Every structure is written in structure tokens, then in C-alpha cells.
Length: 284
Image (tube, rainbow, N blue to C red):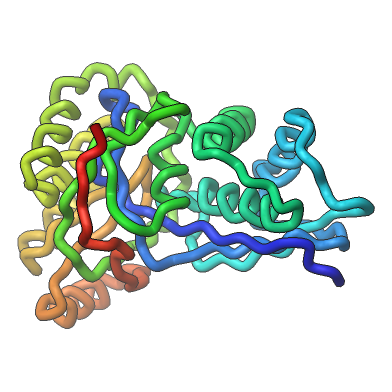
């Protein structure tokens, strides 16, 4: 097997769902998807939505070059699928980078956003243009407030988030159907989340965003579980993305108590950490 190119994309956890008011914010975490472009076509069971096929179609339709001969993919991922952790975006970012690596293509951020956003919308894996998800999966440096529909200049300003251990509760249930009107009905509350993020109240924003998303989804179980976690461990907990996973943020000295609580509740969980650089600047 010949490897033409390789790329990586990372997972993210939500601090602001973009469907609420058109602005999104997520924090990168240390779970990674690696994709290799090869010369051996191989079924990819992780890609039920045909994202990789659609990416190749989008790449070709833009008259971008491809290696000659048959093409295939190898995917290695640490990211749970369909949990609200940006697994689809991480897969696409990694694959797009593998294509760029294979063909020595220098793709602008705007062109990348356009390509990957169109693929996600065509596949039906995103209810917005997902520019905020593309940003977090591409740039493992700092969290941004992102205009989720602005392909050319989506970044507005960086967000200060305290470094935390990240516990992810994997809930064994199907992803809920999303009614976009339910998000629009809560626009004012999601704008409150934006204000919190702009005034260094990121943990309050994290909580409120999770509460609002759980309301939108009618996920009362998520609301109760997050409340129980916070009462018992004093750690903020919230649903991520459109769920169903729940993210808990902990300081190092809270980690043992939190893990014991999750085990007592017989919950399925994984532990990772944020992957951010604490150098911040405002883009004007």
C-alpha cells in the first residue's frame, strides 16, 4: 500500500452552539482523527455518511489535482462518533489535509471552509455551515467566537478558557432530532452566552449553553445528570454539540472524586484534556 498523504483533525467540546444565534464556540481537546490517502480502495465503516466520497467529489469539482490511479483511505480515530464531539468535522479536516499533503496543494482558510462546509451540508451531518466546528478541528491553539456562516472571515475574537481536565460521558442513545425553530426561540439566551464568553465567564457560558441545548432537544435526562454531577462534585457539566455526550470539566484535584462518582453511577466515560495555547489576541 502506498500512502500519498496524511492529515490530522481534532475533537472539540461546545461552549456555544452555533444554531442558537449564528455564533459558535468550541474548545479543542486531545482526541485526534488521523487519515491517510492511499492507493488501495478500502471500506471505511466509520464513514456511514459518505463524507470521504463527498469530499473527493467536492475536491474534483473544484478542479483540484488528485494522485493518479485508484484511491482509498485509512482512518484511525480516537473520537467517539455521533456524540457531539465534532467527529465528522475532524474526519473531514484530516482527509482534506491528507489530500493537500498528497498533491502539495496550498488551500486558503476560506477555500477550506467552503469545501468542508458544503460536504457536511450535503451529507446532512450539520444543521449550520459548521465553520465553528471546522475552526476547532483545524486549529489546536485557542478557542474563538466564530460566525458560523461566514466562510471568508469567520473569526471574531478569541476566548479565554481555564485549562481543565475533560471527562466525557458517553450515553448509549441515538442522537436526537433537532428542531431549528427551538434554537431560534431561545436566541436571546444564546446571546447571553456570547456576552459571558466575551467577559471571561466561560464556565458560566459552558453551563448555560448546555442547559439551553438540553431544552431544545427535550433531553431531561441530560439536565438531571448534569445537575447531579455538579451537586456531588462541584464540576461544571453540560451536553456538547447536539449531544448526546455530556462533558464535565474538572481541576486536577477534583478528578478522583469525579471519576469515583461516574463509576458509582455506572456511566461509560473517557478522560482527556483541553488542547489550547494560552496566547490570546483579538482579531479586528
